[in-house]
Length: 447
Ligand code: G3I
Image (tube, rainbow, N blue to C red):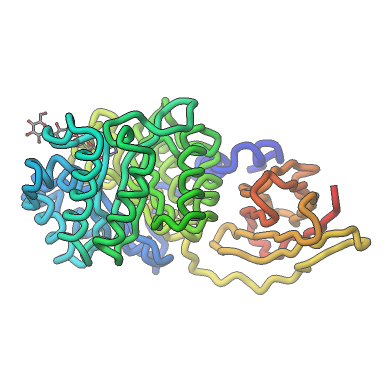
């Protein structure tokens, strides 16, 4: 199939979904021989994990536990580690159901994501009407107590959950916690770090998948600020609850990449996509590929096992049907994980890495990034000017299917013009190579 340069520029992720549609056989095919046959094993091939939310009251369901033990290598408690569950009365902590999940996971060699230490929602009754210093101290005590109790057992904590407002403001959500002062989030992160220095500390939110949304930008600015001031944050969780009204954005890879460029890991933490059949399968494939294309996207968690386990079961948003059968979406994710981790070794690159035609005042240097069976990433660093125009030329049948940290336009299907977009002098792109592993050529001129 052919992608026009314009569509490639605008809809990088959708392009991979369209490619998947063209190759519907891919979705139905069994994993290639030698490929991993479970989600966890397939993700591990690239050092990633594949997790699920688990509900303690389902641990007696043998179908549920059978799938859990077979397929997943990371576990999140769906409700059992929330504030109302772990501290039902002030300073009386209750870990029974959370422990059931943590112990089951660890006994099976799985890791655990902790969810969530501080949140405006699911607060115990005693906390809901608190305010000011009393609430701030109660929140910090909760973070300290729970993170200390689980010290050494948690891969990553959602330290703060859903603290930004929806809509166009890009600012914080109003809540009793927010009213204790804008620094409540960093205070929670510092308390969590002190309590469990070995856990990765994440900020987790929804509707932060589309790079152009104000909420995404607001969270990005907070993480950027935290990184610049040394507030201990290690990761950003993207909940990724999608449906027809909130579809997988075409710029998802850009969002993940831009956050990762701040020096944090990114994780897809609560993935579910309402729908069915090949349409749902293609969207799952696109999300999986977006994570695989970002080195610091360390794993994906789906928000439940069977459709009937979902918090929105009527939307059939998960990878297994109510009987525990694998859906097309399951196969598309498994195949994407297997394809994304190679199996073939790309030939050594052959073309130039640097150019500076005519001594025009700047140099663009190409360096190769990650490689997969079907595509590779490249990065270009410009020196000599902040006001550059870089021409990137790929050779047929290569196509550039995604860009980040640049404003890109196309002169032809094979020639892209890249300009600064305010994110510095290094930008990157993904090339769908069609079997041609030659490096792109790059040249720079001063605008
Ligand atoms: O277990 C009780 C049951 O005994 C009672 O009869 C019933 C009647 O209300 O409630 C049951 O508890 C419900 C619980 O889910 C277990 O099913 C709660 O009311 C209900 O509020 C709770 O909903 C959870 C929701 O978070 C609120 O905390 C969902 O299961 C859970 O999937 C959902 O997860 C959130 C993430 O934590 C954050 N991101 C969004 C995501 C989806 O909303």
